[in-house]
Length: 136
Image (cartoon, rainbow, N blue to C red; front, side, top):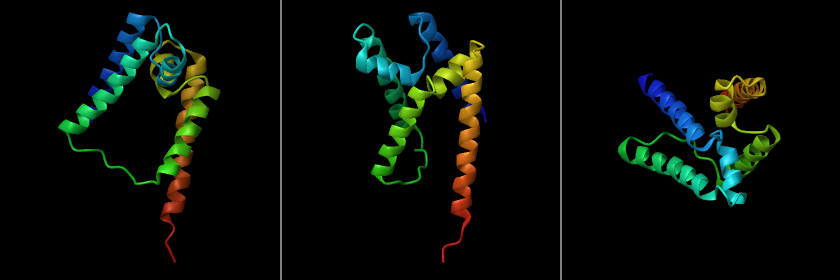
């Protein structure tokens, strides 16, 4: 529980520092879109993304790796495209809405985050239904 608390506090701190330093919300989907298109702030956004990847690599190097359920690469690519499409339709991702939007008391972000959570819970429930069936 303590690691989750510390991790959450660090995410909040990073989002706050990014907002204060750049005047922009630390929504990862927006940062990725900006890194691919906006020439003016491309360097800062690429640095942010490199920091995300680098922190993950450092964490993996100094601790035991997280367990992952093996899925075929094609499934992961389709899932990534669907998530990316959803973030564009929803006007942002969980980091932009859940971490940054709610802290700024945005009603749209509150609704979006509630939708993320409800959809995630429904997905887990459905997946567990199929996983619980005995194989013949």
